[in-house]
Length: 450
Image (cartoon, rainbow, N blue to C red; front, side):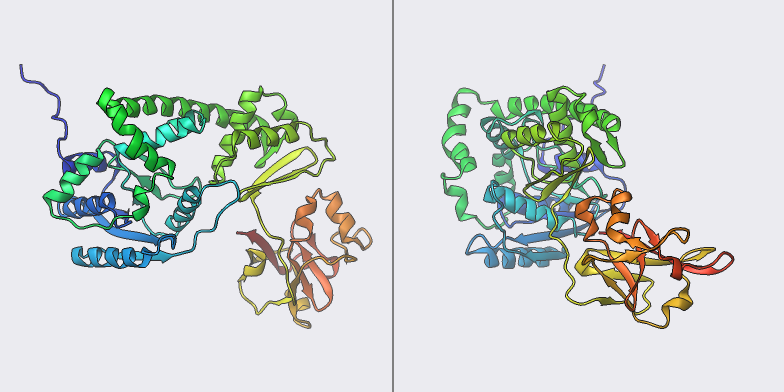
């Protein structure tokens, strides 16, 4: 009786096609992350070959980090390679900034992924292969990583929690040696990063000094370590499911309740924090930093105004609620910003947009905005406001306190003025004098932070 099993893909083209057919629907856009090295050149060539028989749109992106003195030469090479294949290429040039307590490699990767978010595509296709995977696993093990780090790189994952773009790694089961054979078979050219031979970098030390010794004793180490990482990735997924369940029990409107956090075991509390940080798409804190963050949260009182910063994230605490958000520099306005009637008033210096909506029986009376210039200002202190016509005009500071607006947000709110009169405060309302009467049409501003 003939076997009904499908034959296992044997060539790089067959393996990549198998991955694509498993994860792609029809008419998808694929963008190769092209460094110019042999791995990404082979990936570009293979996808270009497959695009003749499969229905996907192929393009490429190259990020010039500016770290190597040969960066511009690599960009020129990538452009020439894509021109020869007729593949559209976008080149982004940046200078990677060192982040405190973060390696240059990690900072460059983070900067590269921020670029990827700007690409109009369905998949960013990465050329990481099986040797990269096992190097990553061992590096993570030597750093004392948990199951998420030891789970290695998945074939497919979302680029970030908010977007629809995914990362695709179709070479994860293919070795570096096989990739080199493909490149030689098709007489491909590529560039070589001179830093790849520098064994002062941990990854290069493992690649050149350690893995040859391991291979001599354990020839199948790539396959077995990859299998181990898949087991750990399953465990990591279960921990994410637990954290998602815990977040539903401990959070209100996107803010973490400290009293509920205290009900979790330390292990589950740490797991929840890691999960919440991953939702922010940031570099995770070290174990020591995470333990210190958790200690300060668990010991915070209701009146504690906690402010912690690590990397590009800040943690704020107010009235027993914890907010995790991207670290921001307080906005400044040198002169009031003038409204010229835009329906969507983009305020770049404040990091958001005010949208105006027509509203029946409420909002701002538009006739009362015609006499004086309409501007946006920030709080300077001493403002008085009357959102409730049944109550006297009062201190805006007191009104914001009563509304439980967190202290760090009070001086960042865009206040709308008509001349020198305060008209509207986000989250509070419209001054009594400017309110449209019942039966009248008004306009209602809506503040949308980026």
